[in-house]
Length: 437
Image (cartoon, rainbow, N blue to C red; front, side, top):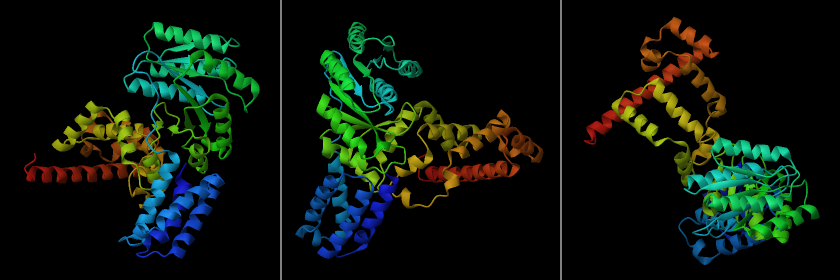
């Protein structure tokens, strides 16, 4: 979502970054370009004005102008102030140390409430808690069925009401069942409308008063642009939100809504929906978000994805194979599968500092390429995967036919794998030669 905004900001700050000495006119000229970029990205006008005022005051300070690299200092100031727009610290989910914690999910229809509810429950389960889901959107049968399907997929119980029933009574019954079953978290999915109306707010207010939730999280669709800020303000005025979940952050929205949200509503962005997968929910961290916008990468985010996606036992086995020099196409397929579980390759590259400036051919980032490689390897016999040296011309033709790819693609994969094996042998020799073997 922040790709276009990041690229334009990077271009606006490039001139400042390259200068060894900065004068006041240079700073003001550079910040005028930053202002244009932010407004084009749908950042609220007042938020943009206040943001640039703070940046300019700090950038023109005596300490900055006397620094060794004032251009880099200005970039750091922009980074710090961007982080400030998202909040002063990494937001946390409110909870009680004992008893049931209730999380109420609200939002308009189509924003992704039901999917977000399941993602949150999944996240709570990974953190060692016992979550339960409650389907209280009784206006749409599909919403109940969707939550049940997602709950079954992640192994989390779903308490459902009857279509057309009373959502308040269902929510109270869900809480009673959660307490009796010793669950620690209850995530409640509620009904939405195409727009904010009196009926919706009255229903949500009754549920809030009945449950007294610890968290009221608004799911805001990032694709709605600046309208998302207006929607958030409406829910905040009616319910008193504790936080916001920005959904569909993997889309092509311009990013201004996310930057404006906290400043306008006063509510912190606590989570970001970054994909359609059940694990594609990142905790919002102001400093890391600012770094991603300015194309500085997010190593912590990359590590967190790896912790969720990578099987530790399988990873240990892969490392053992690589160090021993017995790395096969079976191992290569397993490693590739782990990378795929972390998310699309183009998204992972954005988390690596400096990788954005490395020009990688689009074809190499295409997820279909992984599928093609997977099809080729799976078309081989177990013996061929263990020992690719036996792959003569007729075998390669058979593999190409079985995988639906060309013989040239099979040859290219085998050549790349041979180069990888050679590199691993060199690394093994270096490790052994250093006495670390």
